[in-house]
Amino acid sequence: MTTEILIIGAGVAGLYTALKMAPRPVTIVTARPLGKGGATPWAQGGLAAAVGDDDTPNLHFADTMQAGAGLVDPEAASALADGGPIAVEEFIRLGVAFDHDDDGHLKLGREAAHCRNRIVHASGDQAGAAIMSALINAARKAPHITIRELIVVEDLLVDDLGAVGGALIYDVKAGERLALDASETVMATGGLGGLFAVTTNPTPAQGHGLAFAARAGAVIRDPEFVQFHPTALDLGADPAPLATEALRGEGASLVNKDGRAFMDDYHKAGDLAPRDIVARAVESEIKAGRGAFLDATKAIGKAFPEMFPTVFASCKSAKIDPRTELMPVAPAAHYHMGGVMTDIDGKATIEGLWAVGEVASTGVHGANRLASNSLLEAVVFGARIADQLREKEMEPRLDAGAPSDRMNFPSKPAEPLAMMKLRAAMSSGCALVRSEASLQMTLSVISELNHHPNMTSGLKSALVTAEIIAQGALMRDESRGSHFRSDFPETDDDAFHTEICATSADDEDEEEFE
Image: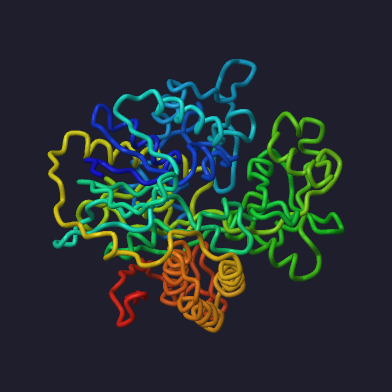
């Protein structure tokens, strides 16, 4: 099987990149039916864009730089902020019905660490679903796009010169493993929240794409920066339903079991403090036995079902009425700021490989993502990749390796008990608060699981990514943004990036990281 341009993943990043590639033929592969199993439809917050009368891309740029705690690339952040109004126009053209006020203007919400109301919503808290629906509709109609569903990618193929030449895939319908040769490969595989015991992501989001890129030799940058959303609904569900930050933007407040608002004790911005600070505050209240709840009874009240239908439905399923009752919340793994290191045009550090969306480290998030910048990043940098590849002369990459050279494990997801053990270890030792001792404990569990008797391709990839995150957290002996070390609680004066590259180990089934 061959294609010139292969896109792995069919969320907003993969679909938008493919659409912008027109008229160049492109093949998208996805493990699940289109629109199922990805994180994009769950995005409640919306799209950050400087489209208000009192707003400018420069202000959006400044907020992005501030949120990233010294590690944001200014060139990338500028491209992101400048692309916001363009992205809104593009999605309107594709049929996304963004919310408008009574005067016909876009209705803009406020989220943490933004200095202006600049979050564009659709049907309240259903922006991700609205955008995804429009992209799927456009992609299915686009003659230059071939969509192949139920295709599980197990690894990247690398030629004799170290360039990526496609992917090793498992065709679920045919029940066979195949090599899919490609001149250029774009990773759009999403995040890794499923590596943690409590997450707002689909549980299969276990960072497999990051593992593929690492095994192929790509540099992974800042993997330790995992953002925990402070207000996942603590209802015992897996994944945990999200209570969007837009609730606090509308005036909802965090309170303890006695009804006392506590965020002013932790930060001058109160309920709209940066996410890492709010998440640690919520965890502190829970560990102190005071509990943490979101109170929207006064700020939103009767309007809740109309304004936030997704959150209302989640609460209703747990027999909680957020119009009159408090919502129990807890931090949950939500977004990965690190990833496959790219330049400003989305090119990875090895030939033939590009990355876009959550799997990429483009430089726009630094140590802490600014709320609702994620959908925008996928759009802006997907377009930049398309600009590079649309007219590029391509030749097949020869001798990219036989499938048997790349993966010797069954083509199956991770064994459930093994995955449960990994998720527990990541949450106890590599989550909101870390230390050398806790990280070494996590790494010991990963090492043990690397010798699991029922190793599968899914478990192997999850273990690779988990180890990269933990190693990155060990290397960063400071606290910055979403990364907090109890044994190194201060932030260094000089900001630095963590860069990790995999090398072959003596045991052919393991990697080492340096």
